[in-house]
Amino acid sequence: MFDPEQIGFFLGKVVPPEVRKSDFQDHRLWRKLTYEGLRYVAENYTSTIVVPMTIVNPEYYDQTVGALRKTGLHVHHFTLLASRETILRRLRKRGDGTNSWGARQLDRCLASLSDEKFKFHLDTEGKSIELVAEEIARHIDLKLKPPTWHPILRPLKRAMVQMRHVRFLQ
Image (cartoon, helix red, strand yellow):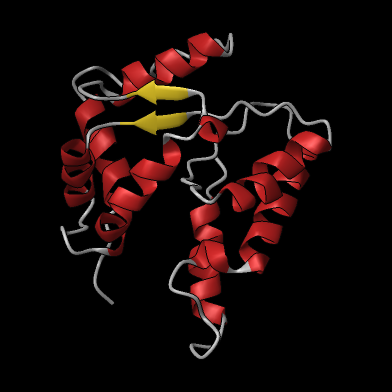
C-alpha cells in the first residue's frame, strides 16, 4: 500500500502556513513526490502496489499516473464510484462531517470523475470492501491471498483499519 495522502499530510506539517494550499494536490511538490515515490517503489518492489487516492484534476492525473505510464510502468487505474449519499455516509464513518473538506468537494469530484480520462469506472454502491477488491483483482487477473483472519474476527480487523483513517480534530 502506497498512500499519497500521507505525503499531503507531511506537506501540511512542513510547508509554512503562508504558502500552504487548501488542497495538498495543488502543491507541485506533492505531485512530484507522489510520482517519484511510486516510481521508486515500483522499481524496487516486485509485488502489486495499491494506491488509494482520488485525483480529479486531469493535469494532476497526467503528472502522476500519466508520468508513471510514460516510464513504462504498467498502471491499472480504477475510479470507484458511488452515490453522493453513500459517499457522505462513508465520510461520516471515518469521522468527516457533512461540512468537512471532503464533503464540500464531493459534487466537484463526482462531476470530474465521470470524465473519460478517469475510466475504468467501478460502481461500489452497496458492495463490501471485499467484493470491490475481488472485482478489481478479477479485472487485472490478480489472485488474492485468502483472508488470514478468522471470519468472526474480520469485523474487528475492518474496525481497526477504519480507526486508522478516522480524522481527529487537532
